[in-house]
Length: 225
Image 1 (cartoon, one colour):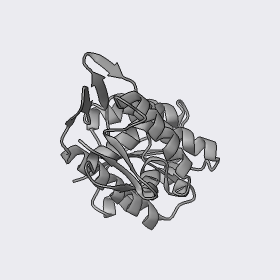
Image 2 (cartoon, helix red, strand yellow):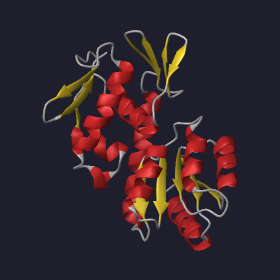
Image 3 (cartoon, one colour):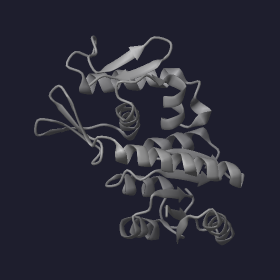
């Protein structure tokens, strides 16, 4: 049974989510604040997290960062905050998707299923890749060059992780943007140019002649291993 950690300090929303998710066959664990959420994530090992950003003790972005420090579990933000800066901050912190309140339960369930599928695909993928002198550990979310760690931002890691899951195959620009930034950003292709350039500077032996992170002009990107 898929376990969902629901983090929301609004009792009515938490109850509605519990009822609907349980009816769909999910095992639901609830938390009403950030500290409880972090404990539940560590103790109960959920398969997906549904997280409100406006918590009474911690900002939701801090909870995301806390979970991301050790776990790749999919995180779906459910928040009344509509400002694009708030959304970008949550996604950059490591969230996988962002749903704005008020929300439709059918849409939420569809996004939840998609997040669970992505999490399962990532878990099933080969956990360690070798890119020249680099070792990419997908499970630990870590890149090393010899004994040194190569620091990637959550956004850079999100791009690399998706390309790694589909290594050798073309990943479309819109697909990458939806996965890493959210569906409302699928036309912002300049984001990809900026972040792929950053990734190449960190990972490629010669960033001007990429060996691993390949561009398919007008279509998308491919990770060659």
